[in-house]
Amino acid sequence: MTAKNLEADLVVIGGGGAGLAAASAAAENGCKSVIVLEKAGSATGSTGMAHDVFGAESPVQKRLGIDASKDELFKAAMEWAHWTKINPRIVRAFIDKSGETIGWLENMGLSFEMIQYYPNQVPLVRHSVKGHGHALMKALRENCLKRGVQILTRTPGKKLLRDKDGKISGVIAESGEGEIAIAAKSVIITTGGYGNNKEMLKKYCSNYHDTMTYDGPPSNTGDGIIMATEIGAATAGMGACNIHGPFLKPRSDSHTMKMDAPGPDGSPIRITLWFLAWEPETLWVNKRGERFIDEGYNLAFFAFGNAVALQPDGITYTLFDTGILRTIEKQGLIRPGAASRANWLPVSAATPLPGLEREMKKQADKGDLIIADSWDGIAAWMGADAAVLKATIDEYNASCDDRHDSLFAKDRRYLLPMRTPPFYAVKAHLGLCDAYGGIKINEHMEALDANDNPIPGLYAAGSTAGCWETESYCYRLTGHLVGFALNSGRIAGEKAVRYLAKF
Ligand SMILES: Cc1cc2nc3c(=O)[nH]c(=O)nc-3n(C[C@H](O)[C@H](O)[C@H](O)COP(=O)(O)OP(=O)(O)OC[C@H]3O[C@@H](n4cnc5c(N)ncnc54)[C@H](O)[C@@H]3O)c2cc1C
Image (cartoon, rainbow, N blue to C red; front, side, top):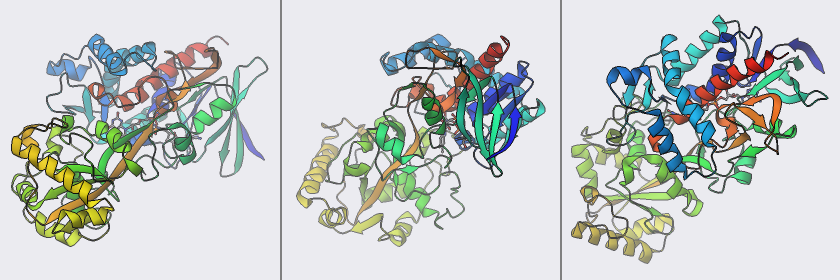
């Protein structure tokens, strides 16, 4: 049943960062009638859960004397990708616009702090939004509404329509009252990724495990990719989950955690445990009891995620002894400091944690933390062969004694032997941030068909689009996921307006 018919020049499907940036840009460039369809109860998306935006040659960087050259960052992105799987023109278009977009956001009243993502990061590109994604999305919503953009929440886009010449002619959406047919000459798809669509994750992502916990909004189920492919759009870059960890399992919600207030599971100590599970001075093993990574690598967590995903069931165990625990009690955690001044972190680095040992004992035996007098006891809990775990511990302790990790070359500052019982094991798993790949686009954010021809009037931006990033988070371009959402959204909005001018 069709509840009503609407008409617009442009329909944007998905009211997250890319969607509202696209709608804003279209309205700013003279598009009189823009409708944003949003599936959830508010136009927020995963952008509302984020905190950092990539930018190169932004006004903030210029004021601080940070030399973040677009050319150099383009080269860094392409080197990271080895010039494979991604379209360099898209990367270039995104990076070139990114600095100006930060200024655009400042003009909406937002302010930024420049922070590092990994130790000694140069140049600083991570613009941390004051008030985080919440403030970012609020500013974008206000900008849209000020310019007459209509945002329809709880109204998912369902189907794209093309006319007899193959041009986009509208969208079918669904509201509480039934179907809505919206006639429109141009549509921008910005429905985010497919992180909450298990079927698609299983089908496309070689590194997917059922044990992963999805971090993003429930509404990101790949609808845009499904709708676009139904009318002949091609996909690109599908093939991997964007993951991070190892984290405590079950994971507390990182966005509501506070050190001075209980987390959702009622215990602030679990927040410390969450960070402890990826401290560099601990030892990480898989279910078999085998070590698999340099635990101190780069002090950043996306690469760890990739390594954990290669382990059986995507499950790992973080091990330490009472000696390491007491060192942490005295000196505090290391890893939170690597992310330097990240204003969202609920724990600080180098802050003594007296009473940690006592609190850990209270947390033991609840399914994800065990304390045992022997490594055999730990192995039994993990279901690992005790001889394999013993060999791993012996080899690791020998590396600590030698001050050289001959296996994975871990920084000797983090090589602490584990010989003081009782021993600890934390069960850890992966967080799933998003999934790579989506609708194939070109540098104008036009959606392409199987022959790389643009589908007239159809654009895609943000996480729903593919072939602009590789299958592993590019550290040098920290914040590039939100950065791409906003910049590709703006480009799509501007290009759609030019397309509409032809009619
Ligand atoms: C917890 C978390 C923290 C993150 N932190 C960062 C960070 O600090 N920096 C960074 O760069 N990246 C970060 N990311 C990744 C980043 O947030 C996303 O990649 C980016 O924001 C995607 O923007 P988007 O506009 O494409 O999608 P989203 O912002 O997710 O928007 C998609 C929107 O489409 C809507 N939608 C879905 N289907 C339909 C439909 N059928 N009809 C209508 N609407 C629909 C959704 O409800 C949603 O509102 C983080 C991700 C998570 C989950």
